[in-house]
Amino acid sequence: MGFLSVIVAAVAAWVFGAIWYGVVGKQWMAASGLTEETVNRKDPAPYIVSFLCTLLVAGMTRHVLATSGVDTVGKGILTGLGLGLFVAAPWIATNVMFAQRDRGLIWMDGVYPTIGMALMGGILTLL
View (cartoon, rainbow, N blue to C red):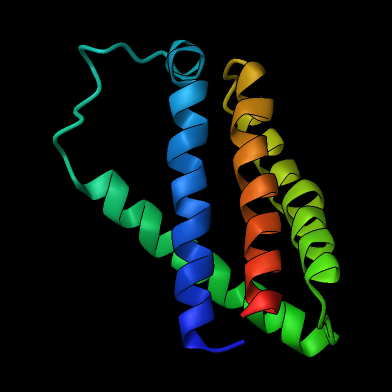
């Protein structure tokens, strides 16, 4: 598990995010109070920051896997899934609830780190 694996894992999770939010995009925008008119798709900042954050998560996930002795793809996927489902998603749920936002955002935003980190875990143990 080296630096290249971190980059590949981050790219895979980031691409999954693009696909995921492409699928739930209209629902997500409605739940977030956004419209096509209010979203600036030409601003690269959210995409850049999103990728940098995904890179940080992949790096930390690599550290967690390495220090925990996770050394197979199955264990990597399971550990990533657990981190997404039982660490990242509950934080998202907490933020949504306290911000009094549409509760539908919990599952829409919770799926991304859950599946994204499962992908990361698999890739980080594979490469």
